[in-house]
Image (cartoon, protein in one colour):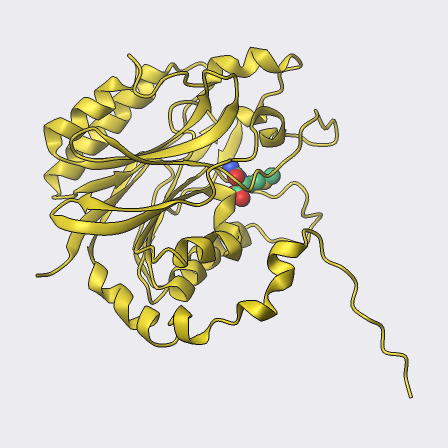
Length: 320
Ligand code: CDT
């Protein structure tokens, strides 16, 4: 029996600081309705999908940022997404800011099935940016101020999705996609479908002229395509795009196959649905040949990957 599923990236255009969650949720439900019309069985929404990308806004008193966080999932405001999942028989992935009952703050993503059950939760590990206001920056990126490093590792779950009995599904969030370690930890759990959302500024303020504008999208795609190829999996990568509160985020959401090819790509920087039919059996080739981990990996040579954080300088050749 074919292990095929139709997946969708539901890119969101900008959400302004003044816009309440209900506006975003309404737009997401319209995208789910459209996805259903196109036969999609799983919809992937972006990182921090319910609000503007608030880490660009500085709150001197950190607790004043709590208004951006969800204390329950579902909540009264997000329940309509879960109802839409049941109504349309569609699973979904949602990124949001999580405030736990213990007062901990995470940049979180969940995977929900068509019955409205939360199958998997992931908390972002690679937090970019800085913790203090930086007067040298035109736009702040305060993820390190508002979030703790995720404490759930990179989990993968095998569960029914769409018409397929069991799919190995894993999550990462935005900046994680640039880290091969994140992909490989998912790959080592036989992940077949990776879902990720992102909010990525169109310009790199730290580049100092060394990163041309178009390379922003190139680096995002390069990372996702390499991750899929090297771990023999599919990915659905969904942007929040457009100009939020004067700050531009790029779109270019993509769906990628295990050969590393882009099989669908968004063309706008607004609400946009892209879909692809994904045959999970396509993962078998890579994982039984060039990337048959059990045959070819050499962990005894990879010690530095987990033993070390920063790079050290190499030994210097002393000459003859
Ligand atoms: N949200 C997120 O992780 N964005 C980063 C850009 C950071 S620029 C300081 C990304 O890797 O896309």
